[in-house]
Image (tube, rainbow, N blue to C red):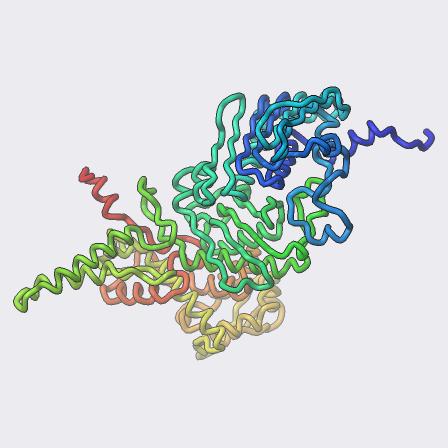
Length: 586
């Protein structure tokens, strides 16, 4: 077959296929045009999953009458002039391909009116050819109606999925842009039934209520921002508390300069920030906004603009990971026994903090009015004040030990309710932070064995441990190879000094063989977690009242007291309000 130049109408359909993959692609491109046109209200309507009908209406700046036809030409855009402009793209669209591509594979009606013009302009296009042009009365802004998508490209149309699947893809794009631009009012309807209506309040939390429900919207944690962002990178948004984990990563949403992107590195950064906060195999819910200098990010790397390339990807990765991790450490709430129907705290404060502050003021007023003979009442009021003292961010509130339940859980009284602590998980957390802190100071307490112990291990296990002898030594495990698959143990960390050396090494090797890859220092943390798991008090172990008090005091000093090193909660909270409901008092 001889080489030939393809006709323009064939080329336009091929190019359209790069931009318009499915009905959701049409919705995405038209929404981006509306946002770039400074719209405040964007309405999206679809039928049969967008295959037969899509309409996007906005109140943006519109297109002047003299430029309407030009707007439908390929690579006609008002957003770029020179090649250098690509280095600082600040708009969502910039290639000038969207309208031309959509028009090439559909029957499209384009109606627009620019500010200051008396009438608008309406064009009807079929397969890229204008068939009608007339003046029309309409408000400022643009309305684009797309019918019979891929009517002239049957090969593409037959690969579309079911109406339900295509609808789901449309929902995903509209909801993501509603999150990215909470100051805009979005309305999405399918076959005249409203699927989403964002308030346009400017609060991301309000959008999350509409997308994920009241519980998520109200209890999501606002990302703590740095006062002076490194490298001009500012990270903001909302993340779910650890109790809101999901089975897959689809609930992680990342925006870069207002653009929804699919970036495996940033998704991984967010997931890793939740390390030890979530059970294995579970994933967080997060909406993370990354704002950075446009010159540091290349958005011109994919036809659909769904992927970006960073000038320094490691810096962006660390900024996102650090911001999410810091927020979890400071604001993650203690999980409750049952989800409350009341408002969540959202800011990580102990539930009922406002009521506690009011109660504290009342107690102080009553204390001021007590006479010298009212000592019993004074002691009671002081006790109430101790229990209701609001904790520092990232800490847990003061707890008063009541007793032990099932020789497994510590029962304590806290502000506004009861707290149950898993004694094993809590002790693991205390030991874990202690041993890593000691390692950083090069002062891990170790115990030299009276006689070095020979431990026979499997070849793979012995080789793995031999690779990490320096790390083991830094954690108080002085081990050396003794030939073949035998290891010689000279000392153990003091916290496991009474255990059999062979069992300690087997546990450590098991953690390494499992391929466990924690957040920052994989090997060190893997070893420390396993050592602390073996050393911590066990379920079924009787504790004295003084031991329970000492454990709680130590847990209060931890940087991350709410979970054990493996991600399980150390405590749960049963509020006074929950108790009242269970006893029929509310």
